[in-house]
Image (cartoon, rainbow, N blue to C red):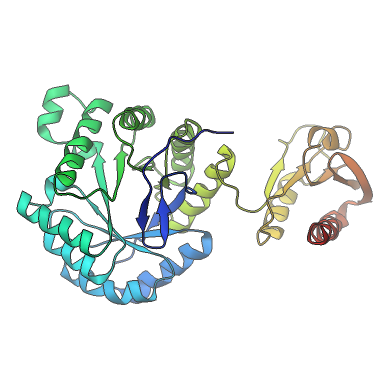
Length: 357
């Protein structure tokens, strides 16, 4: 079992982040926030996918004015993403956001930062202190000669101290880079210096395919090291796909489990069943199940049940027929064209047994 780093617990609306609470899945809308209906449609889609906290961009007064309606009708707690304009930060807090994503260094003078921090305290909102490798302060770039883990952490700690000096401690820290090794090193170093919850992710990770790989490696490595209290997978793809990948990463690392997992073997010359189609069909048929079961779709009746003996239920294909097996034990031999329907009947029986116990 993974031992998670002990971090401070903070309240973000109805959610607890840090302190050993379940890792929270985030995403961000890509609609114009001023378009209330479009933004709410996307938030609802994200909620259905399993998102637990949603961030919206607030680049102007029109977007800020839309926040009250969005927050009132949103099924998810709403975070405002603010850059440079402290008045927009104040407006977002007044609208009822549960958290602000800011960089204290670019929000304005110390007096303006103090006003934002004071309002956040009054509204019982959290702050996410964000540092991005692509916008590292010039003085730190010159000090370290390039973007390093030490530079990112120093930038974050400077911001944290600015906020702490104002008597505010309800913070989450994020250190974002497109480089996986840099991101990992920065978060490991950060954990040695402060105990605030960490928001983790690989920024600008890429398209659906490459971005998933980079995110899985980076976020997965941090999770396996016991780091991370909330995550966002950043993909050049529909936001709901970010949530889907985040859930798979959390499941793969054993940190959280979301419904069933379908394992399947690679195809080979012995395969005598439409393996790829079957694996996809089973995934689709079990998508609505919430029980944390493992299903197997194997291409060989000789080795399949043995190789996937840990699966709660599985299929092993053969010539013109296949096997349904459970925990490595064959329970039925069926015609190949009926194998999915027979699998679903066996699954129904399994679920009924679980309810009965």
